[in-house]
Length: 124
Image 1 (spheres, one colour):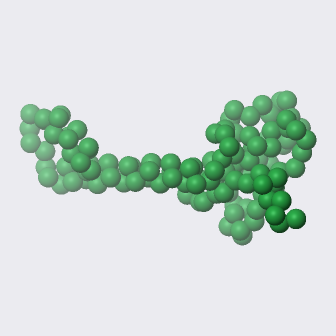
Image 2 (cartoon, one colour):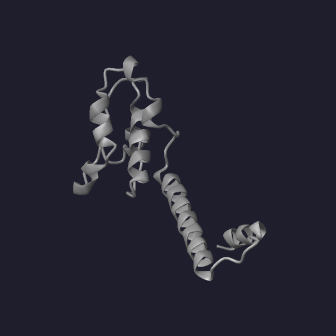
């Protein structure tokens, strides 16, 4: 709010603004700032190895069904606490797709944690 207040003061309108308008702008600035900080925090604790989005995936070069992953990106599978495991050969886009899905789900307000199967050898 302090930064937004300084910015509003820097505008120095010729006509004094209604205090309610100032408060609304300050509250909105605080809400946006909290949302950005929360998103950045969730992206950090997800521990993605790379940052990728679905729109940068080369669908034509893969046998992966684009519609399936766009549906998964809506995050409905998480409401039943289901995990998503991608299996395939080296270079097939598993990490890219998993990261992109995770980021999409985070943008929808849910929490995500990325794991490589090889790092979970203690389970086996």
